[in-house]
Length: 140
Image (tube, rainbow, N blue to C red; front, side):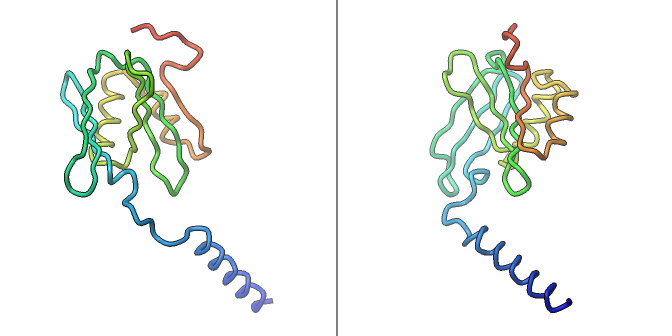
C-alpha cells in the first residue's frame, strides 16, 4: 500500500509541474503596473522594466463603481474601477505596487463599503463583488 501512495504522490508532483509549466518570460502583470494617489486623483502607471511606459490619471469624484474579482489562490485578485466618461473599466491587480494601499483608500472613502470588502477578501470561489451592485443605478 505504501508503494501505491508513493507512486500517487510522484504522479501528483509531476502533474503539478506540467500544469504550472516553466516560469513566464515576462514579469507578472502585478509587476508591470503600479498605482499611487492623493486626495483628488489616482494614477495608474504601466511599466516595461524599471521605467513607466504610460500613466493615466483619474479623479476620485468620477468613480462610478468598484468591483473586486477573486482570481483564486495562484493569481492576483483584481480591482476594477469604472470611471465616468471612460468606456472600459481600469483593472488594478491587488498585488501591484500601491495596490493594497489603493484598496484601503477605496474602502476608507466609502467607494467600496466595509461589508462588501469583507465578503470580497474572504472570497475563494472566483466571484466578483461590486459596489454599487450591478442591479443598482449609479447615484453619483
